[in-house]
Each structure stands twice: as structure tokens, then as C-alpha cells.
Image (cartoon, rainbow, N blue to C red; front, side, top):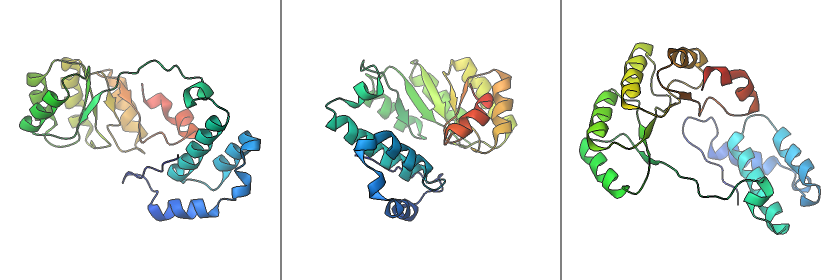
Length: 205
């Protein structure tokens, strides 16, 4: 099974995914020459990261099944349980209290920020919960002064990291915030492939 996830901040659309899939040559996607098939997917057209991921995901899944191994075994990934965080969308205090009660067994949380109410959201969370947390801004900040103010509050609260605070293309602002050394700055949308990782990783922790 492969899935093309299409969040609104990507250029990919349903139509572009379908066009990508219809353009593929199925004869190139043979499991008998698995690595060649993967290279074909990676080199077919530019962009189209969601569609490319979907096809490669399906290919790898089928290859593992036909060889009688799990995906974890094929990828040499440890199968020990991994603790995940519970994510809150931008919430009122009442909504947050309800969600915290529903997710009381989770060990950590992620708060969505990126609105003019960020400091109030943090105040409410701090009064309602003392568990570890991170924040995901989803490119929601544009003013560096405001971002620094919120980051200073996050440091006081012991925030684990800030995820993608600024526009994905604005690497300079990410680097400036990282250099303030307030809270670790993590990338998300800024990294769409290995090339981005190589060229932009200096701006993130």
C-alpha cells in the first residue's frame, strides 16, 4: 500500500498525482530488479514528492511481503515500541482541558501554534499540564520579534523543540532563531528531499 498525502502547503494536487501515476511505465516497476525500479521512481520527472513517495512506499511494501519479511526487517529498523506525542490543534482552554483528559496516558504533547493567541495557549497549557511538550508552528510566524518573544517563553517552560516556525523557503529566519539558542529548531516543510537536507540543515538543530 502506498499513500500520497496532500497537505495544502505542498504544490502537489490530486490532478498532479494522477498525472504522475499515469505517466509511469509499469514495466519499469518490476520486483525482479528492485533497486533499478526504485531508481526509476526517483528519477521520473521532478517534484511530485507525494506521488513519488506513494509509489516507492507500495513497491517496498510489496517487495518485503514477497520476500517473507516485515518492513522493519527489510529496513533494518528496531521494532521496539516508540513513544509518540499527542498533537493538539490550536485550542481554547476548555478544548485543551478536554483533550488532555482524553490523552492522559500520553507521555508528551505537541501544541500547534502560529496564531496571535500563542502566548495565551502556552499560558493555558502550562496551568493545565506539566508533561513534556513541543510546538509545531506550521510556517505560521513571519515576524522575528514575535517569534523570539514566544521562543523565550517556550524556553522558560522547558519546551523540547519548535517545529517549522517560518515559511519553508525562509531559511535565513530559521537560522537567526536557531542562533538565539533558546529552543531547538526543527525542520519539516523546509526539507523535501536530500538536496534540501544538504543545503539547509545548517539552519536547523
